[in-house]
Length: 378
Image (tube, rainbow, N blue to C red):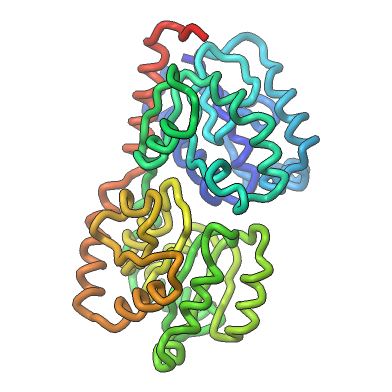
C-alpha cells in the first residue's frame, strides 16, 4: 500500500507528539517493507527527517510549528491536497486530518484536553480545534488513542458511532532510557549547575502540568529535605506561566530550570534523580513516568486520567489538586528506603512492557484492518 504520513511536527523540538511520530515513522517501513511511505512536511517527500536534519531555511521557517498562526495553518492545510493520485491510506498522528487525498484515513487522538479543559490551551490552538476538529475527525476510518482512558472519553464526548476507536499504548525507547554506567553519569553530572541530589520533573511548562502546586509542595517539604534536595525542572517552555514564574522566583536558587533537553540528556537526569515527580492534572498517556522507571528512578505521579492505567502498581500516587498530598508523597519516597527500592524494582518491570516496536506493530495491524474493510457509508 502507499501510505501518507503527516510529519510536520518533526520540524519542531521532539516533545510528545513529535516523538510519537518519529518513533513510528522509523519503524513502520521496516515492519512492512513492501509498503511505500510518503511524508508531508508542507510538501510531499519520501525522505524522513527531523528539524535537526533539515536545511537552514526549513528550520528557520518551520521550527515554530507549535505556535503557528491561523494563516500558516490554512496555507499548509491547503497545500496538503495537492498530490498526484490518491493514497491507499493517510495516517494523521496529530488530532486533525489535513486534506491529503486517500481512500482511508487513520487518526491518532492523544487526548481530549481541548474539550475537557480549554482553559489549559493557548487561544490560537483552541480556535484551530473549534474550526476544524469535529468536521475533520469524522472523516477518519479509524481512530487510535494512546490509552483505554481516552478511548472511553472519546466514546462519551464524540458523536462518531460509525468510527471504531482502538487504544494503542505508547512505548519507551529502551536503547536510550536505561540504567547508565556510573562513569558516564559522573561526567554528565559535572556539567550540571549543581552537584546536589535533586527531585526531577520533566514535561512542557504549561498549565495542565500543575507546576505551581509542585513548586508549592517543594516549599512545604520539611526544612531538612529542602536543604538536602534541589528541584530540577526540564521541558520545553510553553504558555501561560505567570504563576509558575512568580513561584520560581520565590523558591530561588533551590529550583533549577534546565529547559529543553535531548533524550540522551534526559536519560542521564532520570538516572541521577532521587525521585521523579509528575503531578499533572490531565494526561492521555504520560510517557515521562515510564521513561523514569526504565532508568531506575522511583516515581510519584497523579492519581488521575490515564496515569494509573500507564503506571500500574509501580508508582506512588498523589492527589494533584492537593499540595499537601504532593509534598507528603515526595517526602515519603525520599525517606522510606524500602519503598524506594520496591518502586525501582516495580518500575523497571513495568517500563519493560512498553516498547515502540509493539506500538508500531499494533498500529500497522490497524492499517491492515482498515484497508480490508468496505468503505464506510457516510
